[in-house]
Image 1 (cartoon, rainbow, N blue to C red):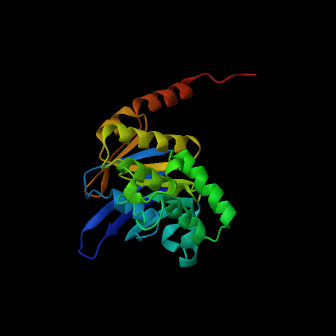
Image 2: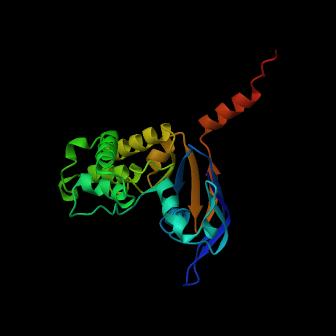
Image 3: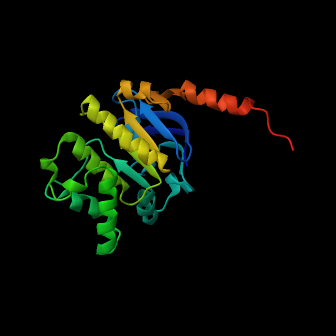
Amino acid sequence: MIKLDKVSKKFGTGVFALSEINLNVDKQEFVFLVGPTGSGKTTIFRLITRELLPTEGVIIVNDWNIGKLPKQKIPHLRKKVGVVFQDLKLLLDRTIFENIALPLEIVGKKEEEIKRKVEEVLTQVGLIEHKDKFPIQLSGGEMQRAAIARALVLSPEILLADEPTGNLDIETSWEIVKILSDINAKGTTIIMATHNTDIVSKLSKRVVKLEKGRIVKDEKKKSEEKKEQESAERPKETK
């Protein structure tokens, strides 16, 4: 699904944002990307969506080699990879319905399909009753739900969530993680960048930790490892 092979990213200042990153994410995985500010989490997201190109190394998303992807194919990639941005990027002069409809309008969907799909994702994130409100009329958690809905509206195979609980209280943060977990359970691969150690420690998900542009830890929770070990040790049936 996603593979980074010895990927480095050096900016014009001479600073390496990433150094020789090796990362494989399988289809339908849910991965927490953790680490302090400046450790390279957002850079990884920008490389996956081809907002940036790697200085060295190879990035594969599905069957696409991101470094060699022609410019005309970039929109096709971004239909498959939804992004929940850290600053949300909701348009303040449009209603929630209009914000979420915009990606569908850009790709030329018909009005009937746009209405059906927008209402479907708004229902999924629990915002259907707020569809005619403007972002400024919503709470922080509701705006985050709207951003998730917009990222989902093109039915992406991969969802990148950049600090989706960053400015939310504990209860609302768990509500957002529950939505993301439900999306993952329906088959969408999710990578969530976060500083929320409470959420990371309590969920049995894979955790990839970055420090100064390098992966310093890549682990599955013990419960997952135990299940895999038990499965491997279970005697095979003989006919």
